[in-house]
Image 1 (cartoon, rainbow, N blue to C red):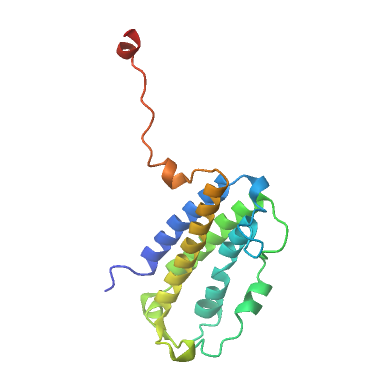
Image 2: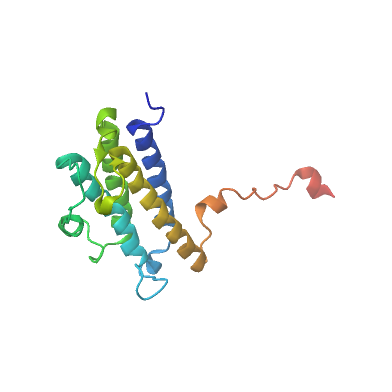
Length: 182
């Protein structure tokens, strides 16, 4: 028995998404068009990319249950057919709502995968060793963490202290009546 399986991964996905949503909420809406470089994704595009990324895994591990991605050419097609598009206009509230709803949809999907299915191997392209479905599912969570780290750098560039840093700072001292008397 694996001590860390789909149910535990689903819990971790929810934690990661909760933190991504906190970053999205902290960045002012007027900064959602910000790009670190002209050819990089904007804040909006990065958040929508995060929200849409699990669509590929729904296809590979769910609806189609593909056993080889050696010749899999549908990554772009799947994302183009996704209801979430990086280039469409969304408000900050709509993006946060998408992150919430799609994150929960993703976690619930992973939670329902039987361990036997999570253990199945998927053939990888270019002679790379096969990966278990579980490793691939974990990869989507890691992908989100990668992009969230980028967004935390953006927060710093915008002068926003990331929530994880704010939460580690000690609370300011509270003036007591005795201290005030001195």
